[in-house]
Image (cartoon, rainbow, N blue to C red; front, side):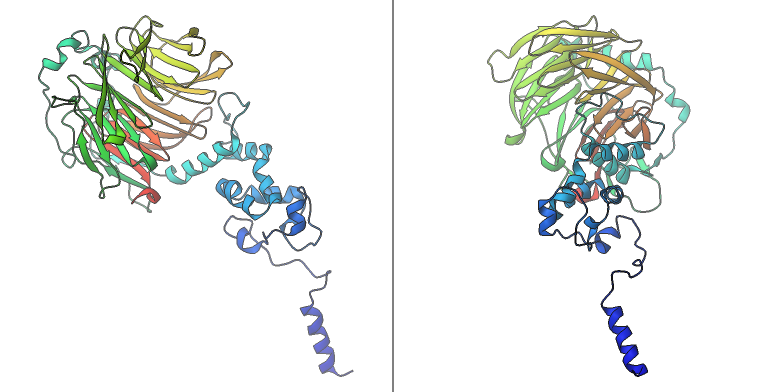
Length: 500
């Protein structure tokens, strides 16, 4: 045999790729390389079998299942949840592995943290991991600084400030509508605002809505599909409705006003709540006004209360209102006489509310938080605290709340009982807003900061935004954050993908 024929025979063998060939080139186990280098196509046998190595030995499923699970742990949660089930049923089962999600959550929150802070039974681990990864991707390193401000001014007396907020003009609420609003007008461009730190481009877009209020903005609420609308309530007695899709900075649609009135309320607007097309605004003028968002914000009704309305919650056609006269009132917006029940669960002003179709949670200046069973119509429990709560947020069996001393509390809602779990020193002054979901925690304070955390114990702070004025409240929907500030502005951070 000639050398030429031997060389041709060797080349033919190499082309046939014998089974005892050496290992393939190294493939980095990162999310960017795996989808391109691994064969994720489903075979007929893979579609019909349980998770087990494939018999043909040519695709991902030929690997031991433990290795497949390890590879999946390097993929984004979004890929595991949405993409792999479309590849084949076998890979789809990776999203059902509860232990794998728990290990992923532990890796995200860190070995020293406990996650979740509340009960683990029936906890949605995959949703939590998805939210945490999205939060980390958007907010890690998204720091900023205030332009110029004396930091010592942050050390205001929290007790005195809250007394001013709750008690000024409250006892004379009936006369609040007759007093002149004395404020200094200031445009959004002239006033102090947040300034972003320089660096790489951020996945978040930050906008300051055009000047629309002439006094402190007390409350803000994101509304509509894809967080397209935003409502803001101010001490100028007005509720403004904004369209976030219009222009680079959003657009003021109009100021809500009832029949024959020039302003939304006759007193400070203190709180907002919504359910579907229903928007409710609560004021120091002792009223709750109802607005129809489907009709462009037309007035839908007026509920007369007996004291300043300090907090609201909406569930379908039901509105819950906490007021300065220690009462929690339940209203049916469809009835001619809307008052269903008036509860006196506390010994002082009701400052915050959270509710679902079964329970109502209320926090009061009397240093208690109450748990009320809506179905049974009875008070289940009152928890005594050393401080009083100003903000509440509940999801599933976990409750997070902020108090008047800068502490953030977490509670476990298990069965028919509310158990304090822990408290964390997050802010230096009043915690005016809290938003909690399974994988995200947002807090804001009169100490002029907004903080974004992973909701573990202790919370893992990803980002701190510094403001030149106290932050009076926040609203979060679908990754979009809006804040109400003491410098008469509404500011919004939203993922760039939502920008129209």
